[in-house]
Image (cartoon, rainbow, N blue to C red):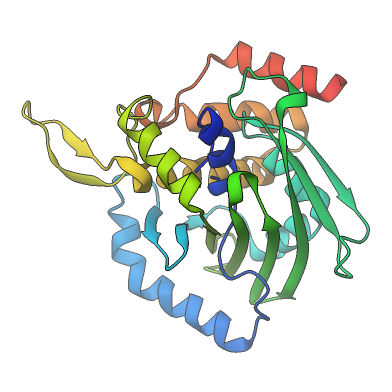
Length: 288
């Protein structure tokens, strides 16, 4: 996610928050070792996460754009995650939980000899579907082993000159009932989107905040990160919660309610609409 959902830029931005990094890189045993080592390094941070659950967010600049990452321990065995998320249709269903994602389809061949995912994204949830732009991803499962899973998505082009959207998702087991996952997204921006982003953040997005606490406000409340990195954190969390909701509920209705409920745990960052409006929108998209 996502970044995502700015007027012109909200449309462009919706795509920005969507790519997860490391796209197209083959997985090896060293990748599993590296992620397992990361878990050991992050155990204490995860236990003390201000999100009140073992989830950590990170947003950063790259040489050509931006990247957002999530590390989390989840209540799902690795075998279940691998079986559930190893299919492109599963990612369509998970991504559609996001309020600004309005349609998704899977093709047998993206043109690169692998399955493809076409995602339709509107710049704001109440915009009509015919105003959506498309992100066309290649879908690759790099590895699906008992001790490690890894998959990547890549889209060459996005709106307003953005491109090179990379998505990566990987996980290792913590124990028989829990897994440690990492997903990241990255994209290359253009001069147009960089300028539009700054204009948005200086006006409509001025009050928007992320999750990282940078200090205290004058009245002693947490002062959350703002700007581009705050936007990346918000959308990283939205997409992490979409994947988790997909894994947690057995059907579409349950997943939509799960996604809405978990986003509402963080209303300062993630609240957009009431539950009824969200569910009505998704039901209308499904009928269409």
